[in-house]
Length: 399
Image (cartoon, rainbow, N blue to C red; front, side, top):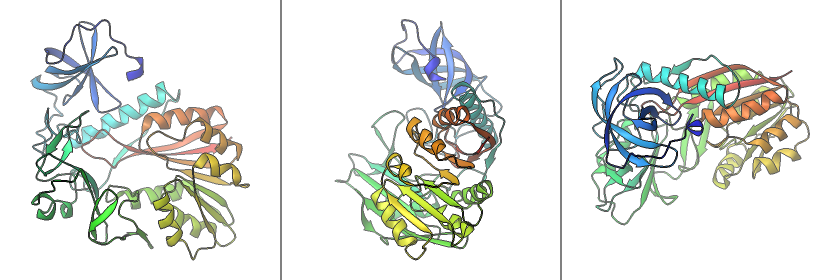
């Protein structure tokens, strides 16, 4: 939606306060308002509210601001559970002021709008909540910035300002302990904390472990993944099991299939795929992160039907001859035109796409539809409660 918005010569200035009616939600966690024909992207608001907005930045395209006073509140407004989820506070949770079920509907609206506008595809879908349903204590991976005072914190919205915190309510309880928040970390810029579902905890600095085990064990169904703490792993505690179940159902693999797991990370989906294709099938895991591929090589070293390819997808995919089915889980930027073209050239019968960004997914979906693939199943999962982010899973079939 942002790309279609242009401001006239702006008369708004940073620090101005204006009273506006809040319009629809936009991709990125803000709501659209207008003041004398000028567009404002507003945080901490809800559609239908009347609010006083303080302008925080102005560009040639639009202004941005925070709702600092709510004159007419929405029925979906709640008191944020976290004291830092306020204007000028932590920028991580942009939906804490919205009732949890209403967050799901807003995310559904954004996905549909992005697919309609960018993908030229009209879709209907559900955005499904996962446990814990209150949207708190789900995040198993956290990156903390360190303030000048040596205290852990998180960045303010669209800023490098560090907001010191004494706990994070969306983090799992094991992260919120005195070892993290009761210590002075002066001299450090950033800390990464990872907690596995088997109870292990690691703290790393600059990619190097400073406490806890140097390998974590994540258990998903009958599979155990031994991974480096800084390798990518789904941050929501319920995500690996939730996604694996749906992905495997949508793939509908057959014995003997040749499958590509693109942007496969450490191989969350590779293990169950290898089981389904059997000894006469093959799974090609392609991943550009050296650390993740090293983990994957160790995890699957005894499975002869798994091949791990270390490198960029656009370089490795053309080297694979037969491909029956493709799974891709690209970064937020999406697969992009070249990779989508390469996938379609292989003519797999099914492509299952996992995405954390509906805009890039919609652009890729448009190219797939134009290339003869039909989107026939899509669902959203609220794997990032209290934020605007959402995970989507879609199946495209040839013909």
